[in-house]
Image (tube, rainbow, N blue to C red; front, side, top):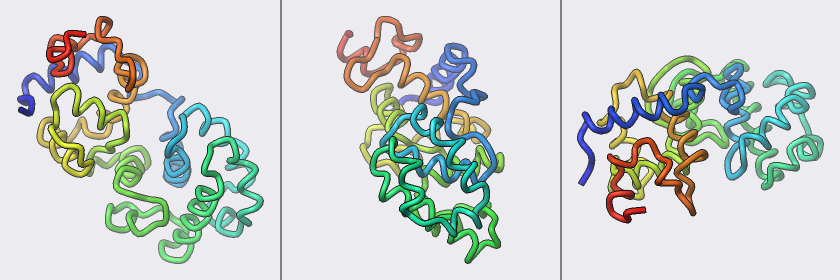
Amino acid sequence: MIMNRQDARRIYSLLVKAYPDARESPTTVCRGTPFEVMILTILSAQTTDKAVLMVKKPLFTAYPTPAALARAKIGDVEPIIHRLGFYHAKAKHIVAAAQALIDRFGGEVPQTMEDLLTIPGVGRKTANIVLYHGFGQNHGIAVDTHVRRLAQRIGFSDTDEVAKIEQDLMALFPKKEWGDLTDVFIAHGRATCDAKKPACEQCVIRQYCRYYQTTGR
């Protein structure tokens, strides 16, 4: 059974208080120009923010604009992002993404979900992040592994389907909170609600959490 809106918003309020810097932290990858947000979010798949932030400066020093990255050779990009894992595929994705910006959008990151989803390496999660952190637009909720895990554990959603989880969350929370919600959930997932060993006894929302109530951890 999915949680009601009142409890969901109470939980979010507690999490915002517990992680006051989550919504404005400059140490997350989704900060910068729309171009930087898009490229860094593509690179963030299956790696840590810390690793991505380590390649941010050298990458954008070498390729500061979509035009510069579109002209890059894959073999020149790979050494810069090598530490991220899957670097060959990611290098191809970001060069192709930059080329798409040049070919179809005049070198600018588009501001619609439909256009963003046509860019190589950009799925709905990335598009939501670009729209919010790049343009201040709330079109949906970016569901990454942390958001997905918390939605299921806490009781915000009963499905494993990312698209349905997003819809469930959008129904529970006001639109003005959609963009920040991802950052707050990620902060909680990293600090407390770990995938393998959640620190339930230290959790500020345990009294509302379905996982805690079910397992008694």
